[in-house]
Length: 223
Image (tube, rainbow, N blue to C red):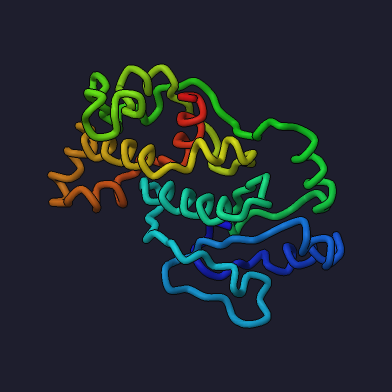
């Protein structure tokens, strides 16, 4: 759950899990919540104790949203029993029974990620023209170049369902860092920074790059 704080749809989610049977839900699902840093849910809440430790200060439309998403994946990947990863928000509501959703996700080794070819928002990133020397930071094999990213650029919906294999490809901090740095280096972001007298951290947080709509899609396409 990638949320701000209170989750108005909690009664729906509680009914969703109760309908599947408390014992079944407890052994077949696990919940992780990324809320605003410092926010905790009261005792008795479905989400009490589900808050992850690593949290980002998120700004709508900023690259910080991706940072929060990856923190959720990172927390869930620590448990080897987790095999499917479904990202939702406080405005999402279930429309199919939990056991139906579970069976559907596990009926295939595919992830569910909407994506399409586009250049939308591509100009908000400036990657290196060529890979760094293998002895340099990151090495040539892991360095993302402008040409590679341009060829793989995709856009889609933020809400995805990933297999463990795909979640593992998306989560690495080094990949996030390269995208974040490329965003800060882009001419559009630099112009924004000059106008707002903002530093790199503010540019990554405030500038409306909508990274959550292309990060997962592009990283998977790169692989």
